[in-house]
Length: 102
Image (cartoon, rainbow, N blue to C red; front, side, top):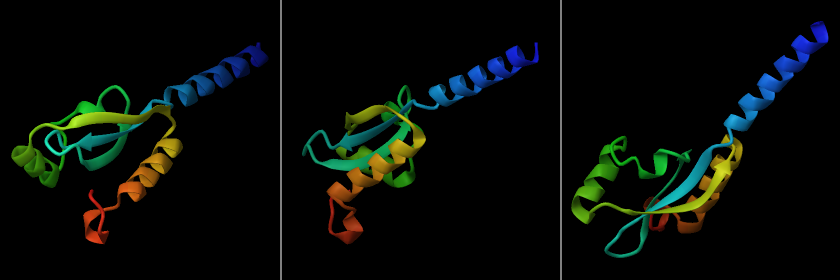
């Protein structure tokens, strides 16, 4: 009986780990210039196309330039994989303060 309880506990932990593999890295692209202006990482189902929960700077940019095109770089990622790929993607384009385009 104790072994079964331990097995079920182990299964529950595995399921929790599997459910955490739901991150996506995405790019928001200016629909007028086709230039990326934002790179993010979040839940695959909601974050890439959630345009309401954004910071003031993002909202001001979109107010001037219109809604973005959303490009999914990768999905089905763990948090660790997502953060790594997000940082790599940001580095690829660079941030404005350092001469990049983001």
